[in-house]
Length: 330
Image (cartoon, rainbow, N blue to C red; front, side, top):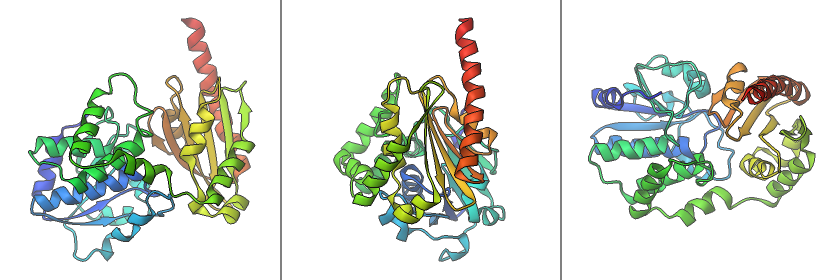
């Protein structure tokens, strides 16, 4: 699925002041996209403010929090339009969703799942990240990417590709864009350090706890672990490092899907899903009101960690049975 970038560019040209909005629990691609898009709009003679519902709990983005307002009403001036980045459904903008509904809105995203919204949409599900899309958009407009923009764009591209480990064959264009960003002054070493460094000792202990807790399901095809409310109180939200947990568990022989259930409170959880090629966890997440990619997705759920684990295991059982049936027919 790909929508025309021209309608998105026309939208940008039609207004003067923008609120650039990201999703809840933002990551490097979301924030990198907002920052780079703000720079592009400035080049176009436009003004913008950066809005995020937060929280800025990930270690690699904490230093960026001061750049973002928590609501559109807190922008220095009243935006005349909104641009939502890296977000497949308006609900994922959290507390900002009601404010977006009052403004003309454009969406730039690379996710297939979710309920379509916005007056102009630029969606490319073949793109590895939204920062990749913005980099190619800037090129097509004839702008030479500067060092600061390159750093934000490479940070986002590396975040969504797991520092390129999620890319498959045919990914040469993503590496071409990465090369362009490095030539513009971005440092892969600095990006890697930002993504994987600066962790606390407590965060390493939490990773160890989650790995030790991992449960093998369906003969090892699924590995499931969880972070409960006690862990949240003991380690704090900032200690989370889900990417390391996914990476280590996906290395286990025979593992096809990794599930991480994390208590967000005593009565609600977030669920992260990662898989290899065959299992479409994006489709599973959509059943629960979430979304994402075929091999990386997530959703939020009301209930305890135990009940949430039971529901996702039941959903995975159905998917794995269907997958086994298809393979037996080959």
